[in-house]
Length: 364
Image 1 (tube, one colour):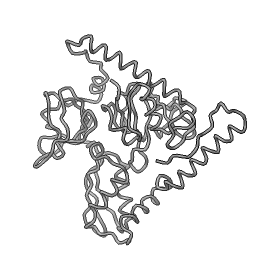
Image 2: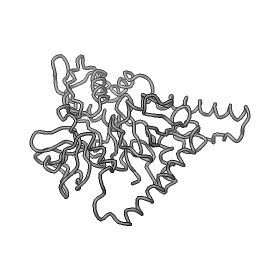
Image 3: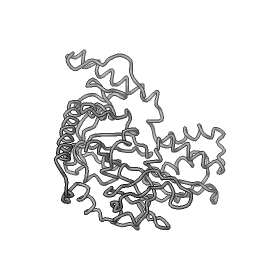
Image 4: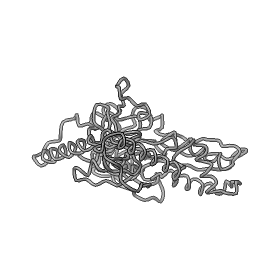
């Protein structure tokens, strides 16, 4: 992470000189960021050409090295395979290479194709499926209806348990696999194969009503639960109050103060105000909390939930905090601001709607 030497003047300095210095510092940080982190900018084709030169400097790709190519691409996109589906294979195809398997985001499908073209394969036959499987229709949601059930890294055969799903946990279904399993995301977002018999499949509307707590609480909910919920509300209020304090602060890569802040710095600082320490970067912060939203589905988010967005290559590159009523607070260029996911709102930002992939609840 790039950190600039020296301090950025505060707005209290005022006057033309103070304003000029703030602008100069912001422009300098942007120039250095573009110079020192070139892969983060520019068009995708040049990005993938650079990656191809790193892994195959000869310019003569070998389909037998496809596994190494795909592992390299996943590492450069910072894909956490526990959370992000990138199950892709490459085999020799007519006049080039054929890509098979499945991903969850169309951006990753496109990135795999562009990368293999950049490697020098004359033709790429892209047969990668993008999940969720359309055959699931509107019934791609569920909740666990047994006391506990393993979630495995493979549907059958020799396999390892990646996590365990408990009664009442929500799951997001991606595919009904051969045999008796669903490939799904667990409550914390982990990918795995779960026994179909353990899942009560639900429609989208009933699932999100249940997830938002519309159904009556179970008998026996006592004062300790009420106390926990009150403490949670206070924590969320502290998070949102701290986040709003950064509105108008200039964007600064690596920044964590009112004089300059980046997206993950705003999220980290805001939760710290409630005594909750989060990791520094967005692709680390996404591992924290329970899932409340997936791509295109933010209706169950509540104020204080974290939000995560991908770039055109399929890499998690941005984070924000949900405020409620379709609005979020984020640090972005040129200054920290409020944006909206609802068309018609003055702050509506279509880019955020298109690139949103995860919502997480850190405070219950």
